[in-house]
Amino acid sequence: MDWDHLRFVLAVAEAGGVSAAARALGVDAGTVSRRLDATEASLRCKLFHRTRRGLTPTEAGTKLIAPARRIAAEIGRLDLELSAEDRGLAGPVVITATEAVAAGFLAPILPGLRMRHPGIVVELVTDIRTLDLGRREADIALRLVRPRLGDLSVRRLGEVGYGLYAAARYVEARGMPDLEVQAAGHDVIDWPLDYTIIPQVPWLRRLVAAAPVVMRSGSAVARQAACAEGLGLALLPCVLADADPRLQRVPTRPAPVQELWLVTHRDLARMPRIRVVLDFVATEARRARARLRGRR
Image (cartoon, rainbow, N blue to C red):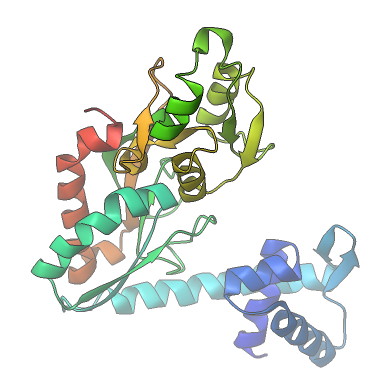
């Protein structure tokens, strides 16, 4: 059996559908469908039930998926072991982070990394998925929740603070919001309606409950841009918003913060180019701790 076909089957099983599997693999949905059809044809059996809610494994599919996961884990382990033998300070390093951390913290420190290690090329991924470090989907992750599973090396970098912001021209036109009356008479830019995974979302909605929502977005950069153009009030990561001269902070009680963690696989941490990037990011995070937290 061709492993290249099998990995498509595994991706569909884990994602629950063709489109989600395609996004995870970085290919188009048609490619996933063709690989799945070819695998089922070669095995002469159906591997998935097709339903309106997606794809669920058949009995044959279930038998195939368990060994496929073991094969994928073994390939990932070998990849890590071989990569860990790298002794150079040149080559790619894939870092994944949220938009706000990537744009507000990581991107500004990269010139310093470039000066010290010109052979290292950083690929900065702001994917909404939590990329799997064990499978080398990324080399380093900056995460807002401490990971508990996997053979990982984890360092706490500090905290990411949030503030309520408005454009200067918005305040000139509408005045500073009165939060005692839950920002009545003002407009607010919110997260998607069902997005309550982080504590900042319900906190904001309670704070400005009287203000109508004029835009929703899961993208911090999109919310920042809309707020800076005067669309409404927005709760934003301070490390991103404080650098925007068009914005000013609205006085309010402190918003919830999120811890920031620097994460890599333990085997990757032995690679020289990964180690120097980890140490560089940790050092710069210590210097930027107040800025990340939103303290002025």
